[in-house]
Image 1 (spheres, rainbow, N blue to C red):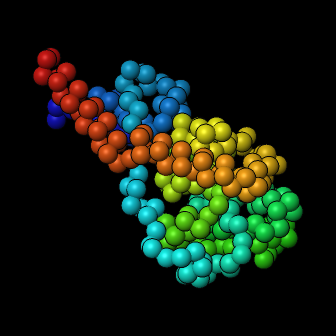
Image 2: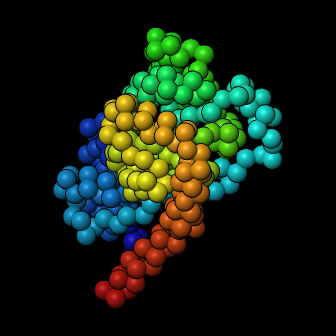
Length: 269
């Protein structure tokens, strides 16, 4: 095999020690290791991988994933089972792992609701943490405002009716949810972790807040709810950034360039 390419797509994996050992051996045999963010690359370097062996190729998003059906807002809300007359703050993240940190999102939601009573919160995702998060929402007084949607088959439609999109993770390799938010032309409020700052441009496509800082998260969400023109501008800029840097075409172009370069180097040797 003339070229061997491995990949790492997260910062702190969920692998067993045996799986980690196999991964290290695979990396030793690879001509290049593709990381999907600078944060992932830095993690590989800390593990002893030589920087020159690592290539960053960002995730590519199929933009059709966020193209909604041609429905009116009220019809879309009805299809999603959501009430009308609300401004929607949305998070799309699984409820299988505590790393997504839904408690921070819900505590931010409580503060947002206190300052902006017309706000409601769509939580899309499934997993064993769902009952616990429902209980937390109830204890925070969000029983009527927080809508747990489980696995959402209509993400494009959900994003279409959303006003602000949020990610509250404690760590990320590179978040596809953030790319979907931006591709849907929605302003993003996300925690400053992992590869997220490589996609979200502070004050240009959204806002970054410290991990677990629900007060700062709430302040940014409210500021966007109060300034629809700014929210729209940030969302439009986010769409442009995805089209330029994070499309499937960009990922394919960069991947082909990597293989061409490696194969040419092998031919010269």
